[in-house]
Length: 484
Image 1 (spheres, rainbow, N blue to C red):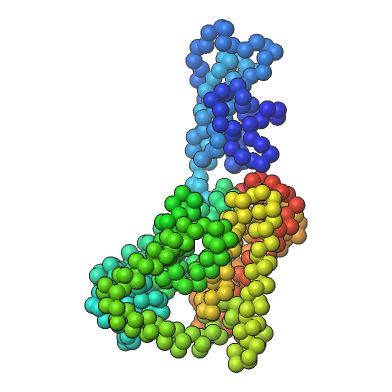
Image 2: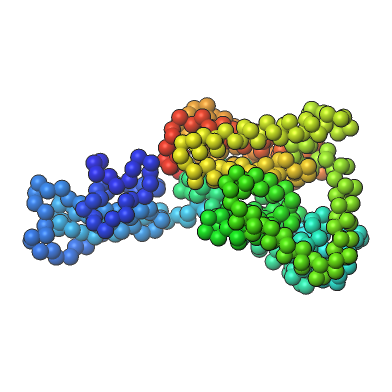
């Protein structure tokens, strides 16, 4: 089709007010394989405006079909219609967008977690918020409640929820997690360019099941923090100060997000760093205003003592799925002097491997794409490199799984088979190696084998390798799976 306004990169139509610059109305919808019927309506035109028989006839199409109604402007002289006609094409198979599938799955898992699971981690958050309101030690042991392991100022985040009864507070926290996850997954699918593909969305969501279900069972904060980091990333150019504030808030709850300081320094985004410093200063001022200078110092001391006491015994616990736990299970025991050097070496190897596709995109001049990949892989590394990379902490690896799903229908056979195998492995972990199927002992045995950590590491590695070795330099081509 000559004169087509979309480039080979699959970008949207060129912005032009002249419809004569566009051509090539397709006979089938570009987002589904469904036949449509047409209702033609025409308005009279002057004879001088009609094209001659040998003149090329302009046609136009909308940027994308959103599933329900499609409006096209173009002639159909070959069918005896006027030179200019408006055709309304109605999709006979009205289906929701694939994004609704993710929202429905997240809502179902959230309801299951509220109804069946105890939400032990959120109970610790709720108790710490109450302790902060009363001005007492947030790290004091409470009967039947897990210890609070976040920074002292993080307890202020949960103070508003602590004013509510536990059932209402937990329901509100779950709703916040659901909304955060839906927004996070929507951006993820768009960044991986699979937002219009049903099969790729189903594959990515199926592989994410081991991570999503455990989040709502515990009432953890990883979904909200992932959304905070996403907002910080999206605001990095337009509102860098606010980006730094959001980043600082996430670091108060999860210090491993300090890893993003490397990206900030590499990009010389000093205003983001300044916003981060302002955020920490505000948090410290809030803590001092509540506990006083001496009380704030005592809280920091109690937090450090708790981490020093609680972290080493948990490094090889079943729930830990980070690189430290993988080293503990398969390479070097915890008591060996070579344990931490082995962890650092494995972490450096993984980080260098993930840097290859980022550098390749940057070298090709795709700066925005390189920044997206850097953000996605850095999210995963915050979980993998954390000494206690818990099951739920690996939820931030979901963007990598969407990248993997995009490669599952790649033109490269090796990348395609590897991606599908990794996705199938994660689906098996979520569906067959779950607590409901294996019971307590079997589930702990699977966790001791680091099933989630190893499967996620393999999936992220395959996604990075497929992107780095992709023979197609055009990243904007959406590879739609067969039957999607």
